[in-house]
Image (cartoon, rainbow, N blue to C red; front, side, top):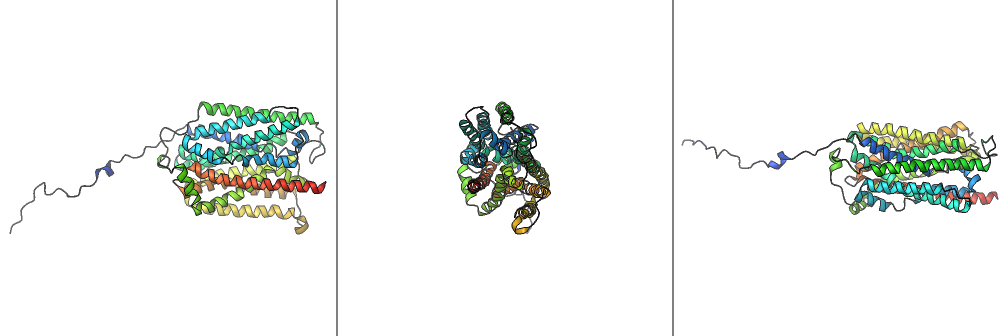
Length: 430
């Protein structure tokens, strides 16, 4: 039996590969130079929000002398920052539905209005104190966007190999603002005569004029930033910088449900919010805490300044390191928290002189406080990157909104308890 040669049609394959797979167009991505301007404007607003929030703690002795504030008033002024975070769900919804520009403009408007209220030179101290409290609350209302939108901005504008660095800059610049308040306040506003570290007599009018100068300067800088953001601050670039930035994310309601049902996320959020929230509240009233240890207003300011600046510098360096080594975030956080625990123990033991009989020196206070700030504050960008990787595809703004709300919750609880402690301590002294 002879074989018959097959025709050309018979040699055609029965199963033809699907053409759409070979014709799929790659996702276009592009990185724009204007991303650095957007990051700078956002960071400057974060800087000013932190500076205004921490205005009164570093100069609490002078503020008591001029405005007749009590120690409880100083703690409440700091507590308005966490209180302003209560409507965080509204700000997260606005960021998710209307974009970063709308939410940032609203936050900048609150900052301008709050700074203006604080600087109104009323003669009646009762109404002046209420104006200052109202201004601090309005500045606190800017917190949900300023503190949560950093990872969203970095994902929207920056390439993957720059994302952690951009997140670190955007999220830590607010800490740098509060650090500069430790430096600007005591240097610009003198302490009254008879307090620790005061060697020159300053009358009440001179101290009040210096405080007023600081308030005027802050409202001027915030107003200039508000105008700049109003003229140019796009929510996103024309072409996304990466595939992740162009991918579809979950809806607002689905994202909240996903986060609250993810036990791994909640455990990491608890590990983040407790130490960062407590340290933030502790730093806000650091001058008041160190006053019984005979630390002057200027020395307490320098301690707070270097603890936060060290955390910012170390945090950016670690974030840059994490850009190249993505699988070591957990190990980095464990080492940071171990160092923070040792530094906090070092600070606590000399303060318990009656129990430990250890000497408490200025060098000990300086070193231990600075190390606590470095280890805790530098962990913030690493945590934010870990959150984003854990709950993807939940939008970055919503994720960071939840964890920063929890952090501010613990800050508020610390300051709330501190107000009762100060009231009880004052009652015992009288």
